[in-house]
Amino acid sequence: MKVIKVMLAVTAAFLAVTVPVYWFNLDTKLVKLLEKPMMKHYDSMPRDNRL
Image (cartoon, rainbow, N blue to C red; front, side):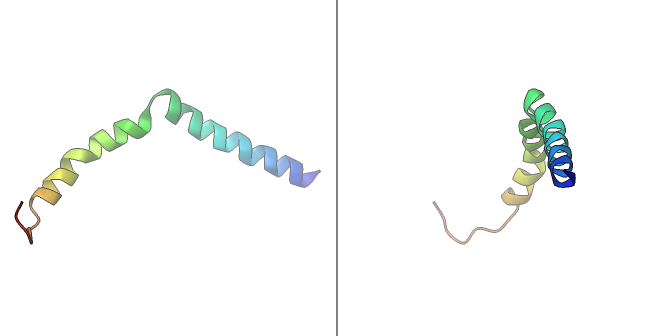
């Protein structure tokens, strides 16, 4: 019975985290937030080959 309670608690915690992330599209918003610093970093890297 204790194992079932732990499994239910873990499932409830997982859903409590993932449902708002899905509902408010937080993963895409995080990627959009990180895009500008990432592009700045990669644009400043030296290139080995020319296109």
